[in-house]
Image 1 (cartoon, rainbow, N blue to C red):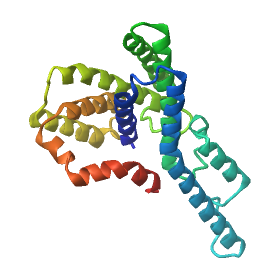
Image 2 (image 1 turned 90 degrees about the vertical axis):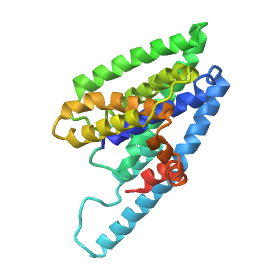
Image 3 (image 1 turned 30 degrees about the horizontal axis):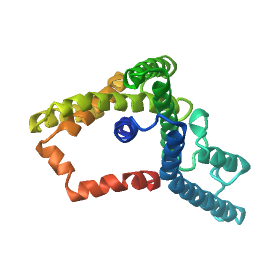
Length: 264
């Protein structure tokens, strides 16, 4: 479950790489939203309709006495949940008992992280002649606020997909943005990382995953470790990076969103 946070951090890095200096005008922000909505929503819609169809078929079969009745049937509450889900609203609501495509909670959260990122990019370009520094200030403030919310409201381990999932996404997404900002000057100075550091990072991530259920406090450092790992591999020229750059791995990367959203 912790790799959802890795997804948010990676998304922050990638979106910052693509858009950090391209969101200074309302029309550019609008285009950004259209493109990101177009990336997330179509498959989300298809999967929601498919699961509603399955629930409808199950409800019909139950009405015909095929199999014992249970709670997972098509109801008005299910349809309302589906509508909110398609509007990316369920991430702020407590609907843990009403899940269609459960992995899609993170797509709800991701979209709101896009909105926050675009807004602070736009505001930074308006309030300062040095938007990069203003952006870092906004980012630090939001990281502090979201971190306090997560630390005070949610008891570790934090696996919440509902209610605070949007805050969780924003926190990790902005850490990804900071990783991008660290990567820029290191890249410009020609910093390269080799196999040894790659392996240290891989071992650290595996060890964290291995122990996180027994040591819940590891969640507090997991997103930082993920940000460090992304920074390392963005600079890396080692063997692991070369392996990840092969055709099959690139193909998995290109297909990862589809795999994730349909895997239920």
